[in-house]
Image (cartoon, rainbow, N blue to C red):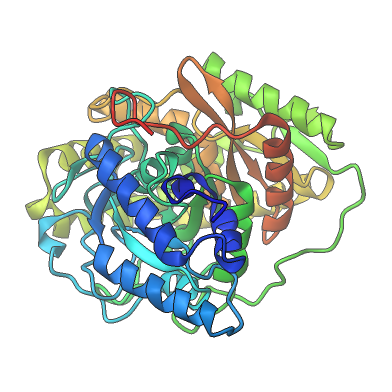
Length: 474
């Protein structure tokens, strides 16, 4: 074979699908390579919480038999993927990181898992998340903390932090996470990987665990999406995952590609959202990305969309009453760190106020109109995800620290308020940490975001996979 099996873990998901399809490697060899990589590096970062080695090898052998029989192969045939702890993977508990859910076995796969299986991909295991995903740092009651492979003293992000750390170290080529307060894009920034936060309704979000529904505020905010090291892998996963299902009433049938736009496509560049300060390392990454898009033929202009701070604040006002009601059920089982974080978040949000909640939904609709008008002439927005570096582990629990984290996450939160699509894409390394930006698009124009992200990757290169700092070698 032309591809050494010990190096298969380095390849992207699409590359792996190609070598399997062309018989340069078997699916079993691909899975075995990733299992060896997991054994070598997961002890250094604690990203994966459950590894389905036997099941994955059995599925890989079945995939190899199908290839040998000459059947038509699906697009992701034989490649492994991993799944965040709060996404249903049949046969394994959906723990959300807490002991109370340690035996919470779902009745079926989540739609996103089901669709990847149909596309030929093989579940390799679960990845870590904070307790009930309620923190911007990944540390779970069941599994402990995930370490940032670039700098273990800093957070890997959350709540999809285990997925990001597994991707950046080569333990998986493709992952599934979710995003309500930046939980796909923030770990992508901390760990230096790519992620797609889709438009609300683009990719179905559903679970067979729990009461069968969510409060209206989280229905309007939470989305599931893919994470990877390459933009092309996000696109491949997006094409598989998108589309309606009865299991998610918000999911809608919308074409994957929108109509062509007049060229050059205009991009609004935001260096310092709402003028509240941006770290030099983050600002420099956005500026570098702006120059690269200009070189790629985009029309770049430094201008900010309307009311970024108000949009971020509206998200908290929408979520606050529902979060505080849910907290009444979670409080008896919550650890001190979760309690500290949530109480700090509630302090930032303020006491629940029915009038403020009522107004928040009106403000959201007004902001959607304002941003929609803005994006008529500047369809894409290039901006930071968080405006500061990954914080030091443990520096997110006091009231002051939570307020600072909310402030630095303002652009990511604004996007969640409005349900817009965004792609996180690495653009370099500075001060020993990755620089990652987000490309935000109009509703249901993930294609525009992915095109721009691909242009950035083509010009600024690939920074992963890496070895954990101070951990196992390649």
